[in-house]
Amino acid sequence: MSHFVTLTLLGTAQDAGLPQAGCGCERCSLAHVDSSKIRFPVSLGIRGLDDSNHLIEVTRRLPAQLSEWASSLGEKIPITPDSVTFTHLHLGHIEGLGQFGKPAMALKDIPIYSTRKNLDYLGKRIDFKQMVDDGNFNPVGIDFEQPFKPTEECGFTIELIEIPHRNENGDTAGIIIRGPKNALLFLPDHDTWEETLIATNSRNIREFFKKLQINEAWIDGTFWNGEELSKRDMSKIPHPTIEESLMRLQKKEYNDINVKFIHFNHTNPVCDDRSEEWQQIKSKGWGIGRRGDVIKL
Image (cartoon, rainbow, N blue to C red; front, side, top):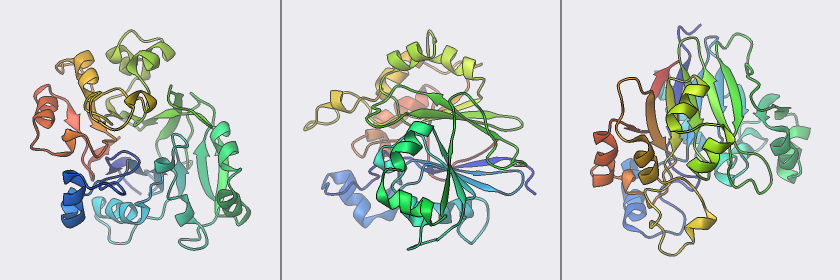
């Protein structure tokens, strides 16, 4: 039995990771030759009090993430998840699901948690339906704001909260993970702070966090600013920029919770810890997620 609920950050990048397919930018090119520059898509691993293992988001880099998760806990054999939860249907958050099936791990009866709308849509995919028919997954629909325990003695709850995002085919959730002593908000994706604050009846970000009764928040930091993609219409891929988040938060105050930015696009200068932008976040007292970060709940 574990003495703590332990949460490990298994990736910090936007869905496509770093390097991004087909990109020859300096940052992606460097990552092809220097493995220390690689960033995995965002994902979390949770070790419960009963030594059960629970995965949040299933990315294309699943094999490496399960290995690094084990290393973060001082173990040598890659973790085998006892459950899966995902926030929404965008490909980078579910792309690794096939690894649970016959060609790879061939696991049985793994609970997969999300909203009913998300699971209904996912069930229309032939590959996922086949894994359910083969007994790899047991889909479990979850209502918003209804905390659940993925195993009875895990010592923590998972709660989905509805978040405005590009819901082309399903829902988007933020996830609150609440342990015996601390609680964390995992919010890798949302469209705008304005919409999120309206949806949660909050006047500002601090009130939003206070209502959730959390001690830590890992939040959407996809883009640094609105000029980051010269060849794309950024209004079609809305995310609150880090610049805006810093403008709203200003400097960390003595009674503020810990906040870390995650889910970085490969174009985001925060990917470089020597950048002025990275230093700007740190100078205000806020954090930047690093793969392998571990906290106890």
